[in-house]
Each structure stands twice: as C-alpha cells, then as structure tokens.
Length: 153
Image 1 (tube, rainbow, N blue to C red):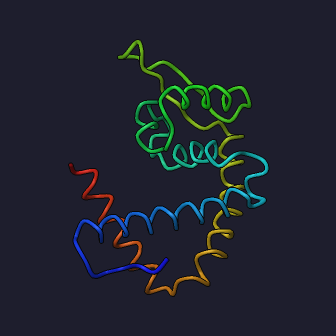
Image 2 (tube, one colour; image 1 turned 90 degrees about the vertical axis):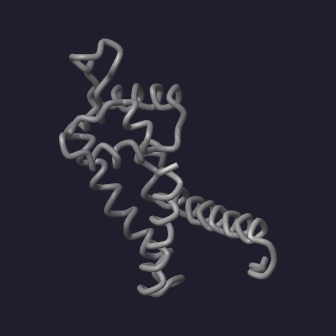
C-alpha cells in the first residue's frame, strides 16, 4: 500500500505508524526464522542481549522489564528458564527484600556472543540491500527521535 502524504495530520500519523509497525513485523519474522534463533528463541536472546549491555553486570529485574517487550510475569518465568539452563544468575537485592538482580553467567555470555554474531549478519543481509548507508542513518535518527519523544512523555 503506497503512503498517502497528503491529507490530515491524523491520517498521516496513522499511516506512518502502520508503515513502521508493519516493517518491524516483517523484519522480525525474517529474523526469528533465521538459524541464529534455533538454539534460543528471540525473546530469550533479548534478555541475554540486554544484560550484556549492562555496565555493572547486574540489572534489577524491574529495570530489565523496562528494556524488553514482555509483561513482568512473563519475564519472571523466562528468567527462571534461563537460570535453569545456567545462562543467568539471580540474587536478592540487599537493600530491597522483594527486588531481584540478574546477570549473565559465563555460559550466558558465550551464547549471547555466538547468537549475536550470527544475528548481526542476518540483520545486515536484510537491511543492507534495502537501504543505503545514508538511508540507514536517517532511519536511525528518526526512530531515535520518535523513541525519545515518546519516553519523555
């Protein structure tokens, strides 16, 4: 469906959102079907990836929840599965009896790196032929601007 840029701001905003959402869904479906995620589902990899970017190594579970697309109860079950597989470690937050901190184990780090390398190659294979480097920079700028505006509200 071709974008209709003329018309009301409401219609343009709705069409822009729909296009962004459908593009994201199409890309995610391709990435989820890639061989990189035969070992570990994408949502579990997302947790490993998010933890790998944490400077201190530990991240509170509620902070982790802010960075991924799962409900708190789904995240709790997912973290339990990752812990049983030896990919993450959990411990109580000393100053908060109800809080839980999570970090990657060595096995979690290794699996994240292994899948991550393959995942990046898959992303390049999808995005590279579709968008020039300048278009990728512009898309990055626009999506960061959109995210910053939404999270500031």
